[in-house]
Picture 1 (cartoon, rainbow, N blue to C red):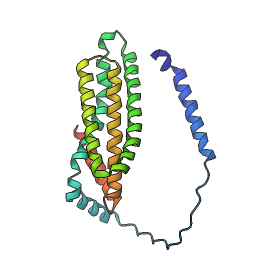
Picture 2: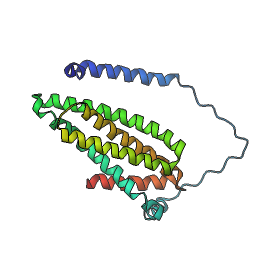
Picture 3: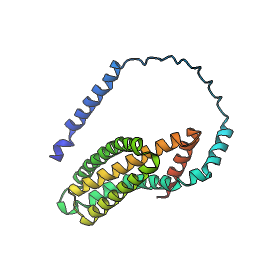
Picture 4: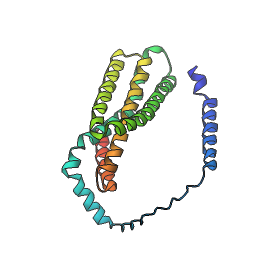
Amino acid sequence: MIKHTMGPSFFITLSIAEAIFICLFAFLKMPVKIRDTEEEEPEEEQKPFIENLKSTMKLLVSPKMVWLAGVFYWSGASIAYFNGMLIPIMDLQQLDTGRKEKERISYALLGMVAFGFGEVFGGFLHGMVIDKLGSKRSCYVNTFFMCIMTATALISINNGKYNYLSYIMCFFWGWNDGVINIFMFQMMGFEFPNPADAFSVWNMYQGVCEFLC
């Protein structure tokens, strides 16, 4: 089944579906400008590059940002892990199946589809959790799903077989990534006076951790 699924017809079908979705954008209506009765605030003047750099460096070592450093590093480490390890893990789980290397990689990539589903649903549902519970309480939910992700990964790796556990492992790794991204987006966007500097610090921390891992 996998041979037929990953054949040329599979990619042709995806290309046709993508073309249809792109064409649907032609039917979108132009946004309607709503006039506000209140006076519009004047736009802030763009700061010079040096000023932006100074404010970013100042925020980098601020106490509020330092408390989030652990989450930054975790997000970078998790990205490095699932990008570099999940497919090799699922490849190794198939060594005793007699499949050729290309076929094993095809199955491993199919497992990453579960990762994509997990990331979409995790990010969407965790946004609703944040709206209901708030940022602080949602941290407990983050920790809960992080434990589930770790447990499923350990069980699948110790099992050493490519089966439904491999898909569950990928799903929860995707779920964790979606949860962390949504959590950090709302933290950087609403908890700091200058979101641009906050996002810059997050990307800096995350990039360094990805490089080290």
